[in-house]
Image (tube, rainbow, N blue to C red; front, side, top):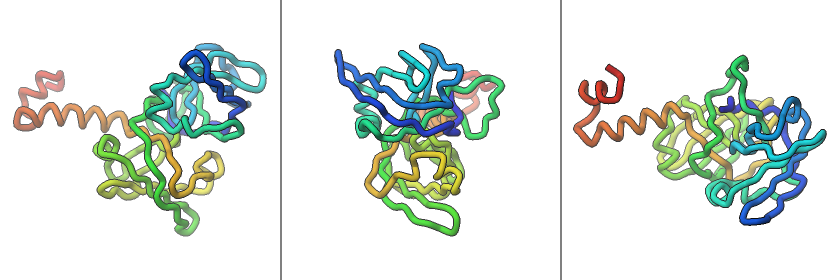
Length: 213
C-alpha cells in the first residue's frame, strides 16, 4: 500500500524488452534508502517489485499486461517518473490509501492556471468515473489528489505549487496520458451497491448476508 505522497522524481536509465517482459531501470536516491530486493516501489502509481538495487538505481520487471493497461508504455530512456516506497505502519497517512493497482488511463484535456493553483481536466471512461465523487480522492500518476469538480466524462483536480514542483505532473500537457487509481473504499461501496441493486437495492437481508448486521 502507498499514500500517494511522492517521495522523489526518478529518471529512467533503461527500458529493455527481453523474454516477454520489460526490465525497467530507474535512477533514484531517496527511495533507495533501506530498499532491498523484493520491496515494492510505486512508479507513476504502479506497484512494481524491486529485482535489483545498487547505490544509485533500482530495476523492476514490468509484465506486458501492465504495459497494456497503463501509461508506462509511454516511458522512454531519460524520462522522469514519480516514485514512492510502500508505506510502513508508523507512516503518517498524508494522502489516502493507494494500492498501486490502477483502474485505467486518463487523458489530460486541459491545463489552466487559477491564481496560485493549476487546474487539470482529465477525461476517462466509466470504469473510473463511476468510482469518483466531488471532494473524493484519486491518484493521478501515483499522486494523491482531490476531485475538485466532477463532470460526465471527466474530472478536475487542483494542484498547489508544492505538488507541481515535487511531481512529474508539472510536465503534463493537453493530450498526455496519466495512470488513474480511484479510492479503494469507493470501489468497495460501488461493488456492494451494484450487487444490492440486483435484488431491489440494499436491504437488511443484504447487509446481514455481507456481514454488516
